[in-house]
Length: 139
Image (cartoon, rainbow, N blue to C red; front, top):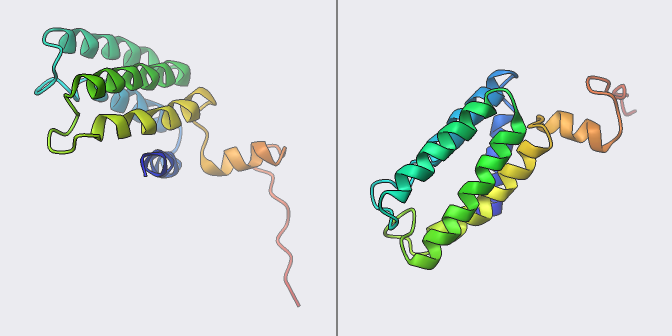
């Protein structure tokens, strides 16, 4: 299910036009840095991680690569929290583990340029963006 959540995230982001899509994702990854602050088990390191993702998110305003790096950093943070037993959602023991499975899906999408689903399809089909084959009527 976490991978499906990541794919849904990518799909929904396809509805947001550029450059707003990149800016939105930079803000979301920055906010993800603060996910563990209220109940995290690493004390002041939680604030340091939040500051790190703030810097990465700021760089992400102009580069999807930085956004992808931010999601990979968050994946590591999720794994550390899962191993420590301090999940992102206190009532769901494996929530950090699930987040650690979801985040790399988003990171991979970001590291490939944050393309819309349609543009990703065109790239896989090796067609220039915006050129679709004509629709023919079926008799």
